[in-house]
Image (cartoon, rainbow, N blue to C red; front, side, top):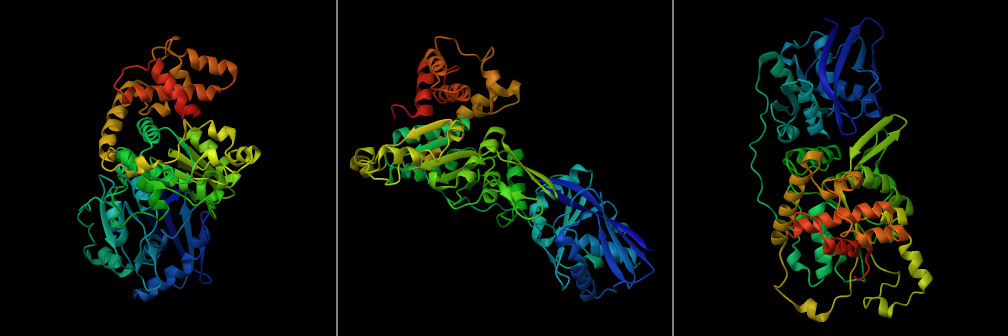
Length: 505
């Protein structure tokens, strides 16, 4: 037999596609040709696979070898095809009977000594295989726990090419996934550790309950970073669908925690202010990889010292904040990643950043305007809550044991989210921040004129944009949910305007 076929899975962005690895051995000058839009890593697979096959005690076919990866129009990236290529070669040369691998997806990178090494992105690959009707997969031993997360699949692992050859020839058992024993939860930052800042705590709770973006502006030591770091602690755990999305993104980036379990806690990303645009929204050679905003999907992206970020990095966030996804187009193709993260901007009010606040600021008015002007109007227009924090006072700092813990606040947030999810279920939405403006302005959700008098006045005067109008309405619904009311009233709208504009804070 000079032809063989083995199934594998390729990734384009976060989407997996079933790939058929075809091998044809023909008479002629010995060599290996790979077709099907392979990247550089795949071109180098010919040398890795040859060394692995020989060092595993198998015979390398001294013939003209043609490898084709179907569909040929789909870009193939990474080293996960190594194991499938090696098995297909041995099957095409008559060394292996491939019947035991019929309908089985094979994934893995080969070392020169024949070891099978873990690869990135196994979770979305295996999920794509299951969606395509595959019921059995063979993955590297280090990825078995991750692959076993996908229900309805028989997952087995291999640590060497020799083990897989023995399985195909003699039925030698493969490695089973380890038992799923969740580690004990590790304590994280708690809101009880934040002294004072009642307004900041209220803004954080509203942001968590409605999924709103948040900007915290204040002098050093006011608690901006402490508050932002504790936002994940009051967010609900991820449901199954969200956990699969988040875990898949971290798997692609190679950041999955040991054990390969589903990520249940909302992720938290805090890039340094020197971060580049590709590191924020995604990039890299070949097909782009997810950036910080995608790794914070269903969680929190903190931009601490926000005015110090480059203008390009900040402006690149505008489209993902609006649409909840990032579409990265490169010469080799396009990759789309989900990016529905809560953005938190933390900033000092001026370059001198006097701890005493505005009263002792040494910066000229023009310098202050230029500093915060680095946060453009279109970007800030997408930030629902814009809160100015006051300097910390001694009495607040010395208070101990009087602040609510994250667990207490999280219960109120969960109740508010449950109320919002029940209300917006007919629209297929769950969070107030996700509701389109037109839906908020039509019956039965349209608020009566007596409730929105001030809001409409600000829109007519130009002090509030149409986007800002809708965001204030969303905030008002969240405030009402937190306070246990079925609909927002004028006071809720007034508080929402205050949290949106920062006036009176």
